[in-house]
Image (tube, rainbow, N blue to C red):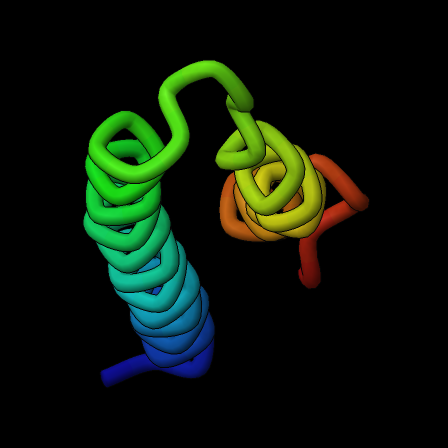
Length: 76
C-alpha cells in the first residue's frame, strides 16, 4: 500500500470512529430523554422539567455532531 493510500485509509478509519462515537451519544440521548419525558408526564405533567436536561445535554450533543462532521476544520 502506498503512503497516500495508507493516509486515506487512516482518515476514513478516524471518520468512522468519530461517527460511531456520535451515534452512541445520540442513541443514549434519545433513550434517556424518552425516559425523562415519560417520567415527567406521569409524575408532574403540569411542570415540564424535562426540557432542562434536554437542552443541557443537547448543546454538547450539537458540538459533538459538529466534531463528528469535521466542521471545526478536520485533520489532514
